[in-house]
Length: 505
Image (tube, rainbow, N blue to C red; front, side):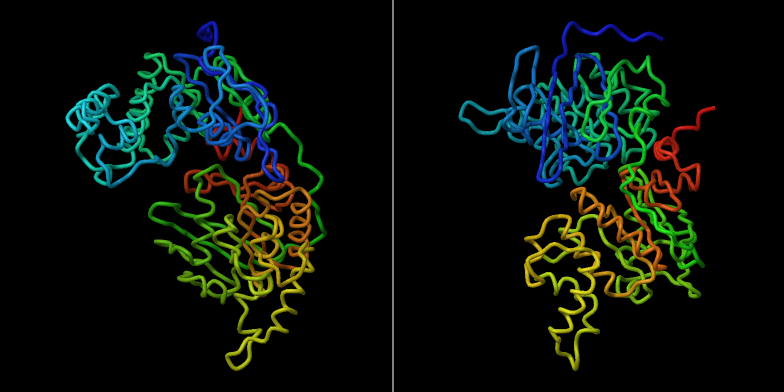
């Protein structure tokens, strides 16, 4: 099979695009070409820069450097509206639509047809909506409200909306994540129709089977950098995996001598109606157990169930010698399980409160007497744990909201360590923090394991997973896809298991 010949020039070209945020370089001199009538798959592990480039393409972010061209002419997208006027639209994994409005209103929101008096022409809007839906093979009544539709139908409305602005570039970001097999097949047929109409399609997916099914070309990002591009016909799954993860584990991940002891937590048959199914694993004293998976794999959802935020539909866990289903966070804490969430800003730290009060929130019984808080004991408890994490702050009276992301993370970890847990769950513990703070968190994690604490670490960073874990569980689509130990813990095996790619012969 040979690759289809390319048009003389791309519809849209990005070159030399760079974008930085405080402490993070999200994109560094990347490039991307999108051609009429072709599907280009944008491939990369979590954190590769895919979401950032989509926001640059749609005018949400402005690049710090680089050039955007449409039909060979340089353009700028200072706003999302400017990108839409240039014919660039995005259909996200979670459709940005309004349940209270009708199908037709959602399709033409912001650009509805008007009468000569400037009023919305409802008859024309419904007729045009029906024509767009027919064009993509969607058997939907434009007068229905969105709340009456399922997820797949909402995706079709989002696609019809994209076509209503005469889009030339259609970005599909994980479009099949919540679809059934039948709905996925229908989406593939729709993509073929869009190609036939000459649309340039950017397709973002972690699923290699669908990338090879519908993409004509690929572009690979890794750590915010452009790695390579070419025709799908000229590349294998193994080559793409190597391009995605082609790096050795950095030696900034400290290993301390520690003994892995008796089981502390045993999870058996944990299931949730919509998030995960049949989760089984055992965690030992002194062990760092890594959980890896792609977006939507269900890792965080399992951890939230173990911490009592959500309830499993079946299954149980053994904590020490007891068997229980955790029904609340209070029960989890009482059993010795604590959870440091991924979104520390919303779920971890309480902004507006000083550092010392954040640290002592779950431990007020230890810092109060007769129903009255003893500030001196709060300060002592907070000081003991923040010192161990090398917290950088003017004082413990400082508002936690004024700290850097890395130091906020340290406060959240200190808060839960102060409860003296048996199991600590760290969900993306170094996400969005600088290298120095990452090293401090890694060092402390290793210290905790060496002291006998059982650690679960959820991470999307392959070097972190391989560098810190004694064992790795890989999840895919709500199930455990693999459990890796020793020499089996390689970047290639992680990505293959997470993406559902069979092992090379």
